[in-house]
Amino acid sequence: KQEVTQIPAALSVPEGENLVLNCSFTDSAIYNLQWFRQDPGKGLTSLLLIQSSQREQTSGRLNASLDKSSGRSTLYIAASQPGDSATYLCALRALGNEKLTFGTGTRLTIIP
Amino acid sequence: DAGVIQSPRHEVTEMGQEVTLRCKPISGHDYLFWYRQTMMRGLELLIYFNNNVPIDDSGMPEDRFSAKMPNASFSTLKIQPSEPRDSAVYFCASSYYRSGNEQFFGPGTRLTVL
Image (tube, rainbow over all chains, first blue to last red; front, side, top):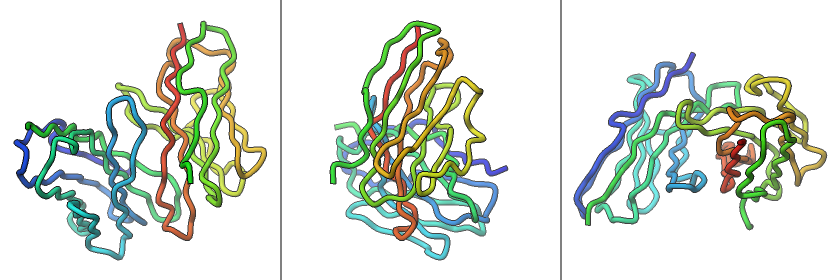
C-alpha cells in the first residue's frame, strides 16, 4: 500500500526567502505526481503535474522535482510572498489506477 | 471555463435526513471523482467515474452512501440516512486523460449533520 508523507507538518518562513517542501512515498510504481495548494475553507488548486518519465516541472516561481528511485518529490518556491501561505499537498497516482493517494500536507506560513 | 461547480456550498441537516450533493465537472472531462476531507482522515477518495460509468466505489463508507452520474455534465452524491460522523467537506474533481489526468477540484460542500 502506497504511503505518502510530508514533513514538516508546518513551516514558517520570512517573506522573500526561498523554500523547499518535501514529499516522500514508499512505492515507486507511480504514473504521475501532482502538487496542490489548499487555502483555508477552500478547495484544492492544482499547481504542478509531473509525469513519471519527467524529472521536474516549473511554473513561475514554483519548481517541482521527482526522484522515483529515492521515493521523493520536492516543491521549491522562490522569493516567497505572504500570498503563498496555504497548505501544500502532494498526491500520487499509481500505475494502472486513477486513484490519487494524498500526503498529509505541509501548512506554510510566510511571515511579512 | 468555470471550473468544477459544486452545490450547495454549505449544508446543515439533522441526523436521519437525506442529503444530496451535486457536481458539474469541467466540460470535456471524462473522469469524475468524489472525495471526503476530515481533520482525522485527511482526503479520502469515495468513488470515481469514467465516461459516466462508476469504476471504483471501494471508498464508499457504507450502503448509506450512493453516487450517480446520469450524464457527462452532472453527478450526485447522496447520503441516506445521514449521521453526525458524515460531517466533513465533500469535494468533486474532474480530469481528462489526454492531459495526463491532472485533477481539478471544485470548492467543496461543507456538510454538518446535527
